Image 1: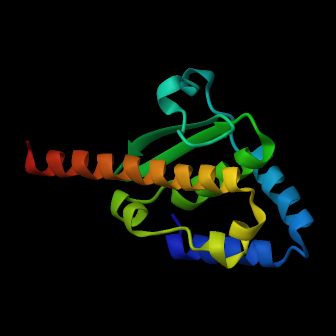
Image 2: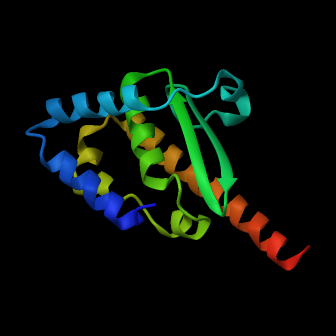
Amino acid sequence: MPDIQDIQLQIIKEFEALSDWTERYKYIIELGRELSPLDEKHKVEENLVRGCQAQVWLNTYLDDGKVIFEADSDAAITKGLVALMVRFYSGQDPDTIISTSPQFIKKIGMEEHLSPTRSNGLASMVKQMKIYAMAYKTKLQKQQTGS
């Protein structure tokens, strides 16, 4: 699994290679199209991310100490945004997810180019992913201490 900072730099490079925000939005939508479809059984109320205007489902599980995220959305740009976040955080250990913020959002100028509702939705996705990571960290600590 690539280091999370390497993933961050790769995302920044990909966006810097695109000439303007029209191209960048097309790229975000394309990322959403490439996202593996989420099994319908995971598109349930408890997997909905609160704070997103569009419907965003976030499923997660632990695999060998790494948090795996799967996601889907009913809106093209939102699906692309959640695909970016899945790429960024999925496969990392809980501590890395908790301690690493997606700096690429600011570095590529995404904050200024997203509507306030999309910005809030993106923040909600990040928050939810970190909450899952904290829950898994606690679970792993309990397993290690045998309690």
